[in-house]
Amino acid sequence: MNNSTAEQVDSGFTYNTSAGNITAAFFVAVLMLLTLVGNVMVCACFYYYHDLRTICNYFIISLSAADILVALLAMPFWLVLQLTDMDEKSKGVFSAELYLFWAIIDILVGSASIMNLVAVSFDRHLAITSPFSYNEVMTSSRATAMIVALWVFSLVLCSLRGLPMASTRSFLLPYQLVVVAVSFVVPLLLMTVMYMKIYFVARNQALRIGRNFAKDMKATKTVAIVIGAFVVCWMPFFVIVTIYAFNPLYYVPIDFYKAIKWMEYLNSFLNPIIYTCLNRTYRRAFKKLLIRSTCCKRLGPGSEPLSCAHSTKMSFHKTKGESLSHSSSSISENGNVCLHRKDSADTGNNTHACRV
Image 1 (spheres, helix red, strand yellow):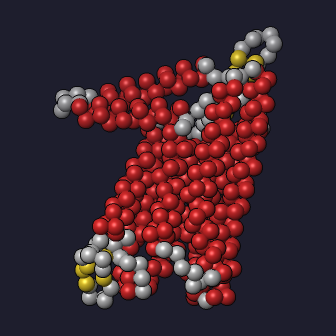
Image 2 (image 1 turned 45 degrees about the vertical axis):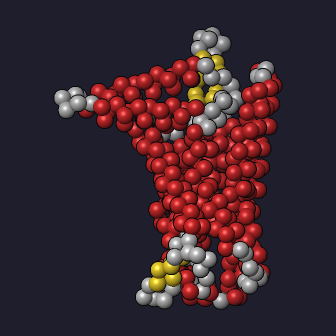
Image 3 (image 1 turned 180 degrees about the horizontal axis):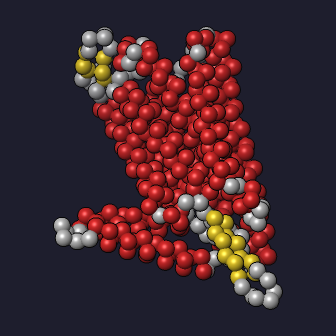
């Protein structure tokens, strides 16, 4: 066992508690905790601050829900497997039913997370390319219908893995290729096209109003981060799935496979950072939420319980109002869609709207 300690259990498999396996399990546990904290904070901000309850943030919350399920339902199984040699004997750590459950859940939450990423890109693409008709096209009911549809699609995709014939070679090959196509190749193409259109529309608008080059570069970096994180985290995993589809006997070193799977789960931790922490409005909401929780903990028994929450909420509204007053046409630095137009030539009143 390479100087490792092993614990024999009744079912015949061994836990390998070597230093390498413990380290791998530790990193999975840390990733699971950070994923939960980050995505729960996104949901908490959405709940406490009504200004964040925009159509786009419906998709962000759905994305956070998928990533929370990744941490709660998929990653714990992978954490336990880090303490085994991941060979034939190690299969005894779970029953066949539990392995199947993990496989189905892994496909469900992974596909739902990716589909929500596509939905976010579609919403932002629509908001930026058709800003004045956005409210009429993307209504609350339509956004909800889109979210329900993508979750139903993910459920159908994962349920196919539970069919009795799913373990046969004739079914598994086309199924794995379909999963790769609909969960990676097509979403990647759609996201790339939509985010590139977003960038070019923003750049053309920036040229009209004379926005400086630094802000254009920031928009380019944002697009690169969104696409790059998705490719880096998911491509290695789907490449291996494709190889296994054509050659089930293909050997991948265990440490390399662990790293690939860890990168897949890493995307669920990065999503709240990319889609909210890079957003100025959400960053401020995070700060207010942390201040709120710290402040309320310091309140004495005789203090009013709502005083801290009320002052924090008022501060958040003021900050958002200040940010809106400085917004202009096109995309703001935090990725929001901001409009600035005159109602009429006579009144000279300006209308501001900002969609996160």
